[in-house]
Each structure stands twice: as structure tokens, then as C-alpha cells.
Amino acid sequence: MKLYEGNMYWPTTKKSIKYDSLNTDIDKDIAIIGAGMSGILCGYELAKRGHEVVLVEAEEIAKGSSSANTGLLQYSSDKMLYEFIDEIGKENAVLFYRMCHEAMKDLKTLSERLPERGDFVTRKSLYLASKIEDITKLKKEYKALLENDFPVEYIDSKALETDYGIKGTEALLTKEDAEVNPYKFILEISKEAVRLGLDIFENSKVLDIDKSDDCFIIKTKDGSIKAEKLVYATGYKASNYSEIKDGEINRTYALATEPISGDSWKDRCLIWETARPYFYARMTEDNRIILGGEDEEKDSITNSEEKLQKNTLKLLEKLTNLFPHIETKIEYSWNAVFGESDDGIPFIGQDTDDKDVYYCLGFGGNGTVYSMAGSKIIADLIEGKSNKYAHIVSLDRQG
Ligand SMILES: Cc1cc2nc3c(=O)[nH]c(=O)nc-3n(C[C@H](O)[C@H](O)[C@H](O)COP(=O)(O)OP(=O)(O)OC[C@H]3O[C@@H](n4cnc5c(N)ncnc54)[C@H](O)[C@@H]3O)c2cc1C
Image 1 (cartoon, helix red, strand yellow):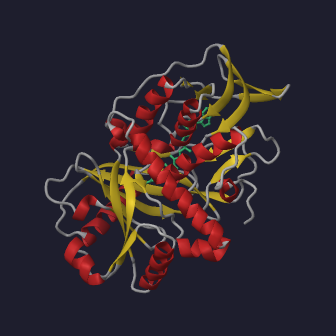
Image 2 (spheres, helix red, strand yellow; image 1 turned 180 degrees about the vertical axis):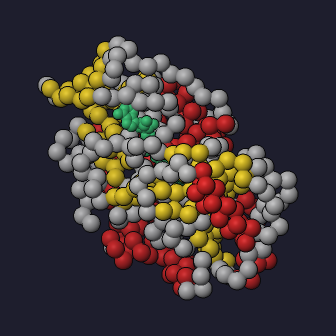
Image 3 (cartoon, rainbow, N blue to C red; image 1 turned 30 degrees about the horizontal axis):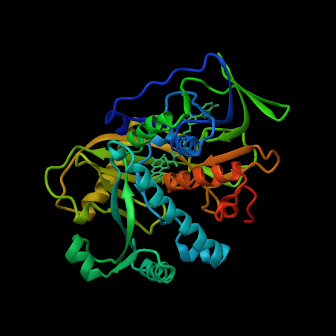
């Protein structure tokens, strides 16, 4: 399955780092398959805890869905906290939001160890009511977040117009969110993880996996890995986990404008809205605007240049409606597939049949936050420790 198509922005921002391909037989405690955001965060966490770990990637590191990622990091999920409370009960819903909030803090701490921080910058997020009826939803969400001590502020229509220049609606302002350059972030983490002892092999597609004597033999074209534990961090591409049936793949569009010369909007906050699918916007370090949305219920990318242009122009039009003072052009545009689970919760944890197999799959709009939380959960499970969030995201959770 092809993950994206178009003219990608992030890979132009940093020179790639080359890792060798696997051309020998090696022996490790843990093997991770897939070097996107999920794989690198798992590799980093496990190496940091002193495990002997190897990460194998079929193509190049950070060139899967993670390079299509628009890099908005938020503790809020696509599904509001009050909606989760209705669906899975208050205790688990609040715990799930706490997991995401904690992952935001962990991403920040990790970024502080990287030379260029992966362009991580703490931001607020402006969550706009797309239509007047949605203001009631925002008020409910504000109450739920506030009651459970999440950092949030309510922005009424007057303040929204005065401070942000946006007319005719209201918004929530969540704090302690962030923007990141996901491509740069992964490359920088990879260097740090290698320093901690992680082995990384690129251009080494896993072709076959056998298990005998409680050990996996993981075969690539020119080599093999013997490992006791196996972590799948294979993103949306993988087809080898039969248990992930309660999810779907959709298509989405994104663009990066040329750098703008004038002002953007207050505090360069992340912007999104209550409509589904939603439109979202953020700024980059070099003063471009990244926009995304126009999701379609299609499980593959489109190669149609015309369709890409049409949908990304719609995104630009939405920006202009919001901020008529911004004049800019599209410089990069791409479409990509992304996975979402039916219940809005990612798939992270142990295989239900083989306890030596683990999954860290960044399904959902908040994939990076889930990958970070997943790396800690998986490391705890591998070490036989309990993790207070594991039951919420586990593959056999009760839906
Ligand atoms: C357009 C778009 C915008 C997004 N925006 C955001 C956002 O703003 N914020 C956010 O948090 N999330 C966002 N996401 C989601 C985010 O991109 C994903 O959660 C994240 O990329 C998933 O990372 P991953 O490591 O699981 O997958 P990937 O990055 O796809 O990595 C999986 C890797 O596994 C490798 N692999 C697969 N099979 C094998 C094999 N057999 N052998 C070896 N290697 C293998 C693949 O080659 C790939 O490199 C967005 C997604 C898209 C598509």
C-alpha cells in the first residue's frame, strides 16, 4: 500500500541520515519492525532502559506516514473528553486524556535532549465551533476538561474577534500543546537512540518471521535477527496483524504554503474545529502555513494531480475565509492515507495469543502522542511492570 503521494515538505527541511542495511545474522533481546515515529520512540525508550534492541526498516527511516504527518501535537483527541465519558465511562475516559497529556510532557522533555529539538515548540490550540450548534458541545467539553484539571480556557465570540480576528463563533483554547517537524524529530531521536545503544537497519524489509524455542527468527533479504520479543511498529501499511479489525483507512490532504511575510495570527496557535472531517492549520519554523483536512472515505491515495489541486485549494480558501489578511500560495501539497480506530483509541499492547508480540500502532489524528504513550506502555509490559493506561489501549479492550 502506498502511504502518500505528492510534493512533501518535511523531507526538504533536513538532510537524511543513512543507516546500513542488515546483511548478517544478529542476536538481540528485542526487535522492532518499522522506523517511523512509533518505532523510533519505542527503540529510544527501550535502549534508554538498557535493553539490547534492534530496529529494522523496509525503506528509509522516517519516510513512512510520519513524513506526511503535519506535526500538530495535542492532548485533546478527535473525540471530545465528554464524548469518551459517555462511551467508556468517566474513569477510563479521564485516564485516556491523562495519558495523552502526560505524553505531551514526555515529548517536550525528549525534545529538550535534541540539538534542534525537532523544531518542537509549545503552542496553544484554538478549537473553533464550526457552527453555532457546536457551541453547546464546546461548553460541555470546557466543563469536562476543567473539572478534570486539564489546561483550558473558554474564548467567547467577543474575545475571539478581538484577539484572533475570527468572527461569529466561539472556541476553546487548550494549553501545553505543541508543533513539531516530525521528520526532523525522528532523525534527531534516532541519533540519540543510537548513542544509547539502539541498532538501526534501513532498506531491510522483514520478509518472514518464525518462532521456535521461545525465540523469533526475523528474516530480511540478506540477514536475520534472533530476538525474544517482537514489536510491530509498522504503521498503516502492515497487513500481518489480524487482530486490528476495528479500524479503517481514509484519505486526507495537506499543504505547506510559501513562507509568508506578514503576520499570521495570535501566538501562532494550532487551529482546528468541531466539524468532522475537520480543517486545521499551523505555522512552521520558517513562516509557512501548513493546512490539512478534506478527508475522504477512500482507503488508498489518489494519483490525480487535478484532485490534489482541487482539494488543497479548498483548504487554502478556508484559511482565507478565516484570515482574509493572509495572502499566500501553495508550495507543497500531498495526499495520504491514515488509520483510525472505530472507538477513537489507538491499538497499543500485547498480542492476545503470543505474549512476546507487541504492537505500537499510531492510529488516529493524534498519532504522535499515542506513539509516545505507546513507547512507555510497551517498555513497561516487556519489563513485566504494570502500566495504568495499558488496559485502555490494549488490543482486547472491551468496546
Ligand atoms: C496527512 C497526515 C497528517 C497527520 N497529521 C498528524 C498530526 O498533525 N499530528 C499527529 O500526531 N499525527 C498526525 N498524523 C498521524 C501520524 O502521521 C501517524 O500517527 C504516524 O505517522 C504513525 O507512525 P508510525 O511509526 O506508526 O507509522 P509510519 O511512519 O508509517 O512507520 C511505519 C514504518 O514501518 C515500515 N514497515 C512496514 N512494514 C515493514 C516490514 N515488513 N519490514 C520493515 N519495515 C516495515 C514502513 O516502511 C514505515 O517506515 C497524520 C497522518 C497523515 C497521513
